[in-house]
Length: 467
Image 1 (tube, rainbow, N blue to C red):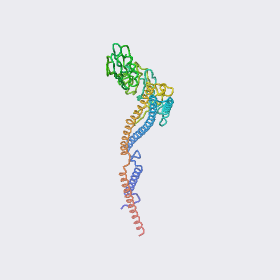
Image 2: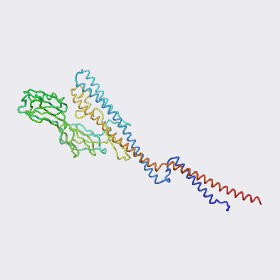
Image 3: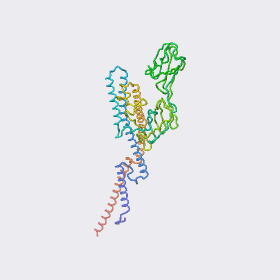
Image 4: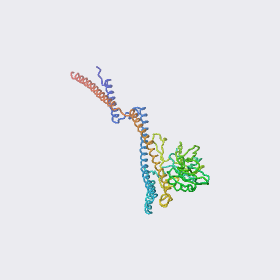
């Protein structure tokens, strides 16, 4: 047996294994306490890079998901406000119909007008104060900016998309104006040769008129025009010809004149109008009535032209990208939606604006222009319902679908990052237990070595004492 004061190989081995076991225990304890496998770059350099890249992507995905949630809130606030505007417009509509029906005293009509004024003022208030997160939604700042509109050419323009958000001035030309349905009937002497019963049909309805054998075309026209509100048909006489025309324009406009008894003269019995035809930056669009719908990569809009207008439209400038959202980790992948300008000076159409329904306006309840008032109200209501439909489609097909995709991306990327970055608790616990056993074994080994040294020392002391 070798005896000396130096540390033997057994001592060194035991100390080395003990230190190794303690290091393993410390590393396992750190991973179990943090539940992360990579606490330092040295733990797994390649894994650290992959995990951090995935974490950056997850951060962007979660921010995009928050954007979608915020956009949903904006849509809900806007839809609620526009729904209230619809209710107010229906209140005005009911008063117009009631006033048109007669049977009300002047005081009652005046009371209805006061109610209309209050409803119209409420619409202005809604447009001025509706906001989300401090941003006004209906004051024009959240919509597209349109300038240069010549009211003698363009009755209305609604923009729903302006690619890039920059200013653009599309070249617009009306090559064929929308026309009314025109039905011409002629006779040698411009009067009836026998008793005639006519059935007049237009877009508003049908009426039946009876004429004696001596009636002239002028008398026929007068009778037709007295029923225009019921049929949507007017009549004019030029010499020996009588022309029946629709009050509406476009391919949906129609006129039908049928002789149930007798004969009116020679000519067609049914006629239809034609739609407007226009070019926008060289592309041809066939409209619906006086309105064309533009749907190109750079512009989505509806333009309603003044009835009868043909030729090149003065340059209109469209700018702004309305409200822009990002629903993906790519900040260049944006989605936009334009909020309408909600006030009585903006809502309306070719027949006029809502502010004309205020007391003293061209279409108030005492003006006698209740048909015009209804046309204005119809145009305003169409603008509001179209805006609500657009917001609903934006929520359903853009926000909802984006959130579904983002949720799927977050789930799968989180799972992939967890595989790289997170601690496998079962495996790490097993490793920690193993390190504990190794540490105890190393301590026991060192204790045995110490006991051996003690025994040698006792032996030496005994030998020294025997002398």
